[in-house]
Length: 102
Image (cartoon, rainbow, N blue to C red):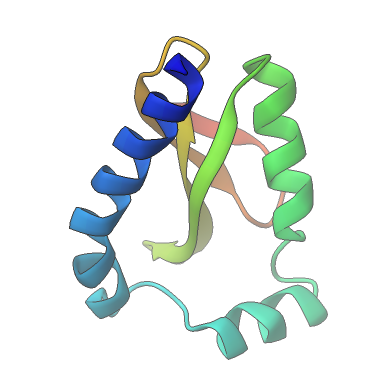
C-alpha cells in the first residue's frame, strides 16, 4: 500500500512538471532523442536507467528527458527512492557518467 502511495506522489509531481518539461527548448523531442542515440551522441536511455538503479538499489525511474546542458547532452531522470523521496539525477548522455543526484 505504501509503495502505491509513493507512485501516486511521483505521478503527481511529474504531472505538475510535465507541461514545463515538454515546453523546455533545451530538451529533445522523441525523434531527436532517437537520432542522438542512433548517431552515438547519446547512450541508450536503458543504460542510464540501469546505472542509476545500480547506484540506488530499489529506486524506480519515473521520468526521463534528454536535454542540452551547455553543449553536452544530459539525461535528466526523475527517480523515486525506496523511501518515497523523489530525486533528480543527471547522467552525461555521451559517457554514461552520473553527474549529479539530488
